[in-house]
Every structure is written in C-alpha cells, then in structure tokens.
Image (cartoon, rainbow over all chains, first blue to last red; front, top):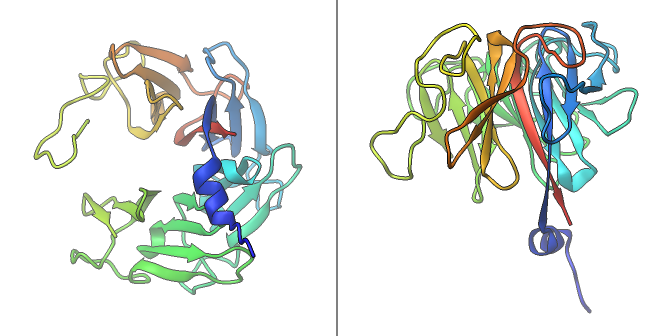
Length: 190
Length: 91
C-alpha cells in the first residue's frame, strides 16, 4: 500500500514561480487592497476584503492590522481584525469572510482575542495569532471553537523569557515560529 | 536594519535619516511591515503615517515610492497601513 500524505506533497512538489501581487491592510479605511506587480502611485488597487466602512458584519472589518495569504489554500487571505477581536479568512472574489478565530467579544478566554495584531497560517490551516492585548500567542486549528495557548501568559506581562508584552508580530521559520514583543523590545524564538 | 545571522550589530538598510514627512525617500514616519518579493531582490516597506509603500532594491539600495504618498480613500491610496503581504505563486 502506498501512502502519499498531504505533508509530503506540499513540501516536496511546490515550486516557486513568482507572482508579487501586493496586499495592503488599509487601517483607517477598513479594507484590504490588492495591487498588481510593478504597481506605481497612479495604479488603482482592488478591494479584496472589507467595504470601506468599519463594522462587524461578515463583509466588514474594523481596523485591519496585519494580513497573511495562504498560497497553499487558493490564496486565502487572513486578516487580524483588530477592533473586532477576531481573525477573518477571505477567499478571492468572496463577498464576505468567515471567522476562524475569536469573534466572541473582547476577552482573555481561550475562545476570545483582545486586539489581535498579526496572524500566521501553516499549510494545515492552523492559525497562529499575536494576541496583542492578551500578551500571548494563540493557536487555533481548523474549525476549532477555541484556541490553545502556545506562548506567554493570558493577560500577564513580564520580562522573563516565558512572558510576552504586547506581541505584535509572528512569523515561522523552517523549524517553528518566531514572534516579536513590542514593549520589552526583543525578538523571541520558540 | 539588516542583521546577519549571529552578528552582534546591524547596519541601516533603506531610508537613512530617521523621522520625516514624505517629500523624499530618506525619511520615514513609522516604518512597520517589511515584505520581500518572490525573488528576494526587492523589499517592500509600509511607511505608515506617510501613507506610502516604498520598494527598496536589495542590491542597489534604490528606493521608489510605489503607492502614495498622502492618505486617502481613492483606490490608489490608503489611510495608514500596518500590514503588507507580497504573494507568491507555487506550481
């Protein structure tokens, strides 16, 4: 019997071809714009998420902070929807997004977020979130109704290596993830 | 800043002169997000409160304004930006 796993497929066969569309999280206009490669100041972008008016409906955003595209999942766009305390996922040409993390009001419960600033998604659609206002990194697996804590302590700041203080970014290297923590001015590797 | 692995200090890459209004490419007002293009030959930078995106060539250091400057609601403008992403296509 031959087992050909998704993991092997994604890591062995994908070849980078280029592309270079530029996505801009337009903070105050509550929308995400997409610009073509080699854009210049007179080039119009297209609105790929949000309506231009702040709100919490599924077609709206409220202060989109950072964004991520999952090229292994049909260019799904993930948005740290800061003032809505949720992570949104939009497929191209959709009229609305879906909530993939948070969306349960502001708070520090594991089903909640507090002003999320950044999102990173792996090839299994697991979402990692810099949960800025809760001083923690959360992980939500696909279709989960709550997350799990992967770094920091919920709502508690500090300077020990185990604590985070307003984490505002997250990025993976080949072995795991890195995050950065704004107010204690350091780069943390886990 | 550009830091090589395991180095103890970095070097300035991109605009060199610190805070300033968007009349040149030597000053920034709150640089937030960096993103490489697919060939890693250019870096894109969000100059948040100047409402512009800069493209910096890694080899030459040449800087061009590709979106903005100045904030707005038109489709070739934005109003502050903390998040940038440059997509890639895989076969």
